[in-house]
Amino acid sequence: ELWEGIRSSSSKVTRRRTSHGVVRAEMFGQLTSGLESAWNKLKGEEVLTKENIAEPMRDIRRALLEADVSLPVVRRFVQAVSDQAVGTGLIRGVRPDQQLVKIVHDELVRLMGGKVSDLVFSKSKPTTILLAGLQGVGKTTVSAKLALYLKKQGKSSMLIAGDVYRPAAIDQLVILGEQVGVPVYAAGTEIKPAEIAQKGLEEARKQNVDVVIMDTAGRLQIDKAMMDELKEVKRVLNPTEVLLVVDAMTGQEAAALITTFNVEIGITGAILSKLDGDSRGGAALSVKEVSGKPIKLVGRGERMEDLEPFYPDRMAGRILGMGDVLSFVEKAQEVMRQEDAEVLQKKIMSAKFDFNDFLKQTRAVAQMGSMSRIIGMIPGMGKVTPSQIREAEKNLKVMESMIEAMTPEEREKPELLAESPAKRKRIAQDSGKTEQQVSQLVAQLFQMRARMKNLMGMMEGGSIPALNDLEQALKSDQK
Ligand SMILES: Nc1nc2c(ncn2[C@@H]2O[C@H](COP(=O)(O)OP(=O)(O)OP(=O)(O)O)[C@@H](O)[C@H]2O)c(=O)[nH]1
Ligand SMILES: [Mg+2]
Image (cartoon, rainbow, N blue to C red; front, side, top):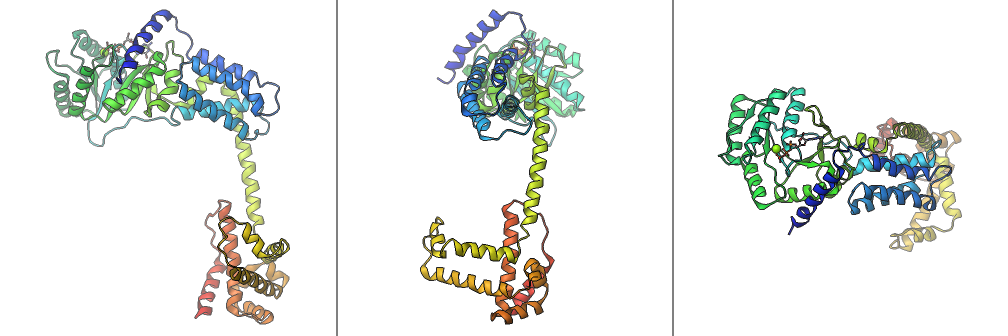
């Protein structure tokens, strides 16, 4: 049964929580220090190698597993980090341990979904948000927090009290609603949640609020009754967002829970609560990778203000706790990128391929042996017939004779030929070829230039004016 695993683990969670009691460790403290030992092992190393990262990678693996990140996620993560560590050269001026910090950071960001995943708002009012989750995870608190969060963004909202199993739950929401100055729609406990949703929605439309947030009842474990109720509410509310509130302390179980809820009722994302508590990081790191659903918001305390978007990069930064190293490596990377760009620029400049280069190339080809040998070495070129090869070799000779008829200046500046039909005519006469053949050769050279630019990923505009004339000439030649 799909829920079995989660059922058995929820008791584990309770145990864990009671054993930790009220002691609140620094968020991710253990993970941070676990990772630290990885960098420390690289101090004094000159480069990153397969051998010298083995030990640090074991530390990273252990730190993640101890933080309760799910095993397949840890495996993929460690693999990705090792591949990059030995696959990418060291950034100049950056120590191997610093570079590894950066690689781990970037991979953590990717693991957590990369960018922040914003709440979605519907085009027509009201946007509806359905909150679900197990008992005590913080749904009711999050409802009010979210209303306040939206209020700060200038959006009005209304809370709907959908927990009909405890009158105290309704009171709790009413009190919190008052606290944040947001209306609460409550209809008592005698009516079905789906009906409450319906009526609440009507009321919200009447009051023209921007967002409706519905709180629902939590259960100790997932059960059919809960899922059926949520499905029913979902059908009526047609929510823009279905957010599952999960307790950060439950580690990778949170990710499994999100997967189950998503399969059962379909959710749009998660809210990770109690991240200020004794959370070891497993939930934050596993959710996206395991469930495919993003964490949209995080709760970081009991106050109404303690709700914020989930920023993967900030979270990774907090986990590593090495902001200075990260910004240093980023600066070094930026310098490298600039230098690379300059080198690339120069390459493109030098790809001012002229007829001398053209000749050099054709002669190099001749030196390497006959065309047939070379073509034979190119994969997929096996079907070229001997007569086609002879044809190609003949073409090369034709080209050579035309280039030989050019003045040194014309060879260096093919534009001169592109612009001047008279010059092309002279070359044709001197080399004993037709004007069309000369035009074709010139066009070919410009095509090669363009292709080179293309190859270097630089096709930024820059059409060659002279080429237009040449194209005209080619057309009239052909006539
Ligand atoms: N430290 C901390 N406590 C939180 C956070 N969010 C909620 N809580 C506390 O967790 C407890 C349960 O919160 P509720 O909002 O009542 O949880 P719930 O999911 O509505 O619970 P049920 O309705 O009983 O299922 C309360 O004491 C909250 O103050 C958080 O981000 N950090
Ligand atoms: Mg509640």
